[in-house]
Length: 339
Image (cartoon, rainbow, N blue to C red; front, side, top):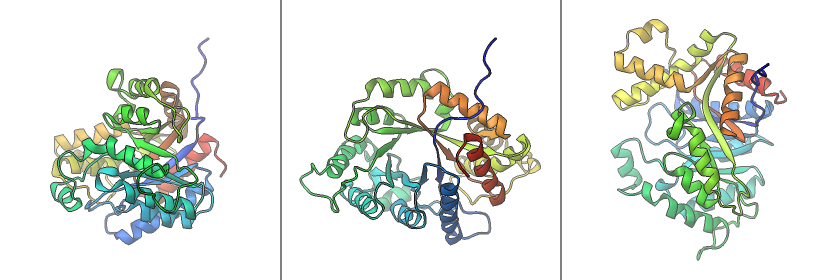
């Protein structure tokens, strides 16, 4: 008899909160919700709480991850706090090293440094940030400079000294997997790759990562964090409704160039969208993990089994705050985290 598939992911859970605005709400309210969700994540037993970096996006208030990390760490006691991530092309390595070391000095053993190579969403944002042509291509060289600064091996000493060896993660897109492997860093992989098969899928990318991994002072062995939009509810329909606002906002951004605040979306409203936007909404939902606790548990367990992930990062945003809180709680219960 073929054994039944596992029904829960037996790996630690983390939460990424991008500080989404809600329709009719303010950016200040969005930032305060991040702090409240971090406290909830800690109470639910999650391992890490991540914040992101987005510039000039009308629907997202999370623009300064180091500042927001400081606020989150100050309002929690045990949960690790990470940048998911700091976009290295937008910053000088010395400044990032100093920010990470300062946070680690104030909150010893609780800070994680996630780094990405994405540029600003629009040309105007890129010009404001000073990220000219080739900025993303310099990521590996800038990463090497940053690691030297964190290790105290650069010509300039970043202060305060990072004596806790802040764990470093690379948000992998494209060449990011190979860069993380060569540097001996943990990798965060998500998005469409989690549902693809073959050479473009997560399993193939992670096979390359593990094969090319070189142990470092930060990580002795490969470490994989798999990220996925997750929505859990008592029914599959309610879980889909919870995930729809972000899927709609993503489709809007891809067709109209602007990510709006999250707002509830009915199926009737979805049916009235242009065909291209409807298709993009469904494509986004297809990469998300939504459903009842049993359905979500089976899908996440299969993802972990297929990829050998060491951790899961829960991403996504919702317009229904009560349903979002319930989803977080159901997921924690599903994974066996202490509530």
